[in-house]
Length: 256
Image (cartoon, rainbow, N blue to C red):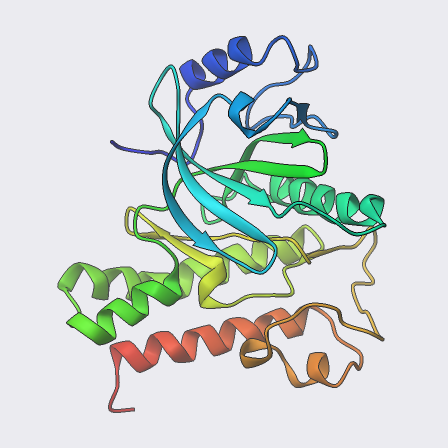
């Protein structure tokens, strides 16, 4: 089944009707995500059928799901049940990922938020598209294991400009991703898309420089100033993307 980045009007209507009893009256998919999400009684009450697990991280699992009435495919990211005392801080982090992704989702190389769900201390984000070829890290690993096809070479050659365009758009919106790595870049129908904005920084003015404790980051792809907990800004994202570019080049031109 072909899955497009933008949610079709028919899917919007079907989902709106199915969740009408619990959704705010002004909720629509991919346009305006309710800040508090749709509250449901359990995962079973979310109107999507599990198809396969796409991956697991330290804080969340991502599954391929289909909408029950249309069979349209999506990715459902469900965070592990929060067992700590400060649920409010955890929920603010969740809201940050939703709001940042929603703000950026008009760009064709960034995933879209379609809806959010909440039950007790469990939280889920419905994302589109459901990447047809997984993440860039797995894509590169497959090439190293089985060799590279002409189509895969085309995808990787195009990735440089597409990823640079996506990052430039983030920075124009005064947002820093802060964790750019192959595992946070999806491959869908020959195109690359940024995902996972869980620790992104959203600045409300032109000063996007931060100092002090960094929090979560991936050491292999982070800039030296991030590891050193010193002054960092948008250039730290550029450094991380450069590391990703080096890995792509290693596949395309291994003799370099």
